[in-house]
Length: 260
Image (cartoon, rainbow, N blue to C red):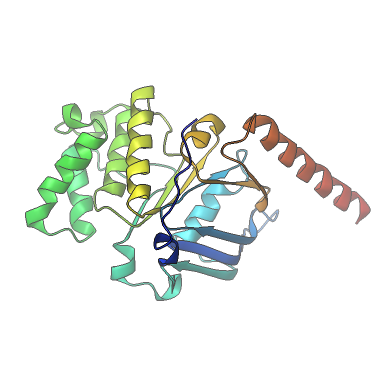
């Protein structure tokens, strides 16, 4: 088990990278969505969000990134309300939600270079930044291949490289290890650890509890669009603890519906 990192006292005083207070977003017809979410991702912290399929992880991430407008509550990025966030704040954000964004006719390198320029990296520095992140994620061999011809796993790596090339201080990744082979998972793990160690706040969603336990400082459990508890990353038998939380929540909801 990898030891949990200990932040220096000065690090704890930094701006909170990402936080949500009382956030809800409900979709018409059935009430699916997320409800009354309080969540904070600290400086230098890898915060994992886990839940079954349909628990609301991707919806919550979209709300946190401004892709969906909340019906209630507020999201803040580096202490700025998301509605007021401008180019300066968004340049500090890197994300990958659900599917990697890669233009099929561009090579892997061209896709990541485009992301670097869109995130404000000057042309004179962009090339070096791109080569660095390509090497970090093991993409050198495929950098000259058009994205449309890459395997699903290597397209995922390109999407991750595009999300990380500008060294963001706020990182939001939805199931980032999807389609990655074991070597890719290890490279991603080390990349996220380095960035957290340098002060980035990182939120990742996953259903791979064993992988989450290797990198997370905090694990929040989401079920039916609500936060229902936390797990200890250093605990024993995370899978059993996870399903116990979910089962207890399902039983509470079923009892409440029956009594209504």
